[in-house]
Image (tube, rainbow, N blue to C red; front, top):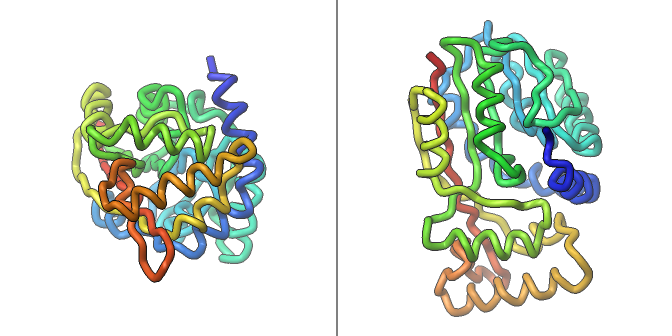
Length: 258
């Protein structure tokens, strides 16, 4: 059964965030794309499913390289941003569906390439979502996931401040936790990479809609962390040219399904 309470939090946040999040993403570098292309080597015959596709940037970037792309997301407002990006990019081989990522509405083995970018920390059970991704991936296909992966000793503080900023955040796994789920699902690991996604804190806060007064508290906590250089929050916060910059710790892992 879907987690209705968590779905409600996601819908509340991302219906509000859709336009500002799309604007933020459009200004930032697609840091996982090169690693993805190197790891899974998409080919023209691939049928790709992007799970939790959000504003569609990843799906639109890959679509010219494959036969077909389906993007799935829970939030209608995010899918509307994806459709706009697709139209602006003049790409025809993508379709979008609104669905719960814990119960993907597709047949077993329907896709040869199944991806997810920066989504798993918004779900109550990443293992369940990854099991669904495996189910819809054809034997011999590839699964690719990129997500937040703070260091183990930073996870508690990382999760705490992210929940304050964005109540739809649940838990950021460590890279080891993410890789362990793949192992438990019987997937064969083919690539692992770490990277950081850097952006100004104020740009991030413009996409955030927590309860009243919370943004100022979050801003103050980040500023203290950046000024003292302790990195207690796990974001490598620093001050550049008078503004706070945060570095989101990310990992990408690619697997083959036997």
